[in-house]
Image (cartoon, rainbow, N blue to C red; front, side):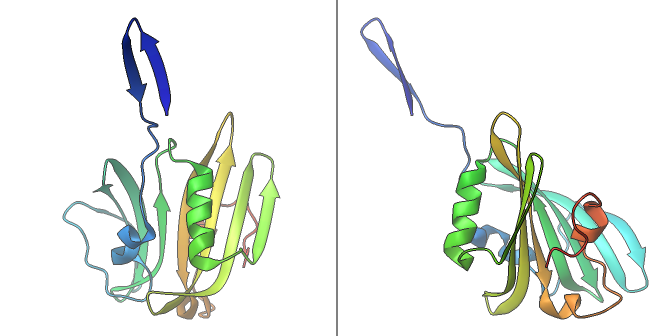
Length: 171
């Protein structure tokens, strides 16, 4: 919190970092039926698989979501947060929920944190968190991948489709 004294008046400004919890993402996590929001774009359709992109308002900010489905069931989901989020806050939240990450990859100004085979809300999934740093550090996105989808040899995750500069199999 930052305080300024202006004459006899004290002016206080609260930090602008939005707050959120993982529970706010539950509706779009893997291994459940996808209920498309009213406004969405279908990016890709091959056979029974589709990729949807949409934004929704969480508290005081918008999150961009990419959801890949197979026959209407969510296979994996990727969430992009505003850059004014704190990397440390998101990483701490993930570590409290899932423990220390199984793998860590670092390339200049970017880092990947990977949790393998984690149980959350009765589902087993992999979680990939991508953080980046310039003058400050911020989250690039969180990716949830269904364990059953990952076991399918023809499955190509959103992570693999979006991040060609990173290791193609971080898990």
